[in-house]
Length: 280
Length: 298
Image (cartoon, rainbow over the protein chains, first blue to last red):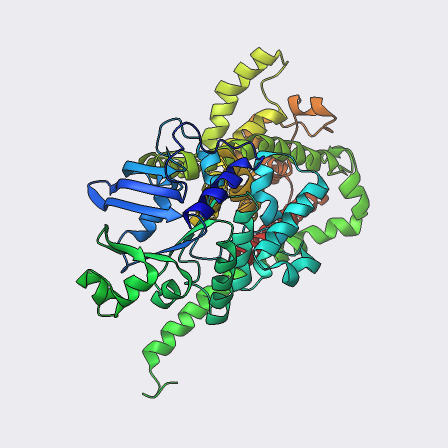
């Protein structure tokens, strides 16, 4: 496992994409893509995340579960610094992406967010065509030739298992798609900027069971290429798709382990109570 | 539905609300009919083409010439000028209030801008006539401190609160997730505003500009005071720096002095009818755009 991850991390870095992956401090553990160390997040005086250490590994799906308000979404947003958008949020501790702390003052936010993509709870395509949704991210960085853009659109939509459904009318408004299609479009849009890590914040909570199933299938496909972290309320989802699971309660990470152990043999009685549905 | 039998009180309230609702529509229709009735005789006397495209407005000379083109052009110059000033300013102000200003500043700024709408237009007229006009004439070396662009400036002040307020509402009603998605895709704040936020709010922004335009085209007092009152054909870019007279100002200036039911009188009503049609069209277009936008966002 470790060897495989090592290979993949190197392969990712070797991609000729001009981004500043790695860097001097990057020799740490290559099987890990994002790692938090004593991460604390405050909203004003409220400590929403209280010293969390997690490793989100390459080619794995890491599920974050816990009752509402436990801080799992806050934690997820810390991983690509989306909490910066919240006026009185403050972050302490380290978030290491390939060994480099993304909260260092010289971090390039634009580059960071391209490396760590995010899919949100509600499907939220931009009110423009399917095509323009996908090329939105790439076009922020450079002018694209027609054929380059076409290629990105096809690859991204194929990656998000949406191509076959929309290839004949790419210039239709994205808002005409069904909820599940819209969410896959949002995933395609994120894939188009070439991320290394995918963060998904309850990506299926607004979808029906069939659409949910398709997204779950897609996640399992995508983990061959990325590290994926998913926040979910749905414990069946966590147990179905994830390799590791972390259980959050009141801003603390109570337990973090291989998914099967969390669900079948949890070490903490609070985890046990939650996964058995006794609260939350 | 009613199981308790007939309730006279309920019935009265329902009728009162119904009448209040219908009254608005009836009033608009009555005003339109009134305008039509008083304008029709001039159409019988002069061909409508001559009225709309005639280049001389000289109602008291001989039989009177009622070419409305100078007045239409006057309104057009003043309104277009006002939009050229007010739309960029209003948009920038709305973006600043919605996206850039800290939360507390936002709470003060928006009511402050809306308060601009409470200033009576005659005050703007005074301001333009006595202060800004003479100063601009001095700076730009103009023969007279009353000209079309000065009216535009005053109208821009007056349309600004409408534009800022409605634009800001439109920007604010764009779901936060649109902004967050854009940022999460590696967009800078500016890219997010121009490429995601404005396109998502475009229907509201366009409607705001149209409503501002409706306000500008119908405004009378300030333009009457500052645009020089000369019903001459505005020409080219220089027209902005020459005196003009708008449709509204013509009605206001001449209605008091014209004899009842003369051609002049009817011609003034014809101008009113034209104005009514224009603002009605603008408001309808704005309404359609807003509705289409609501469908898009939902």
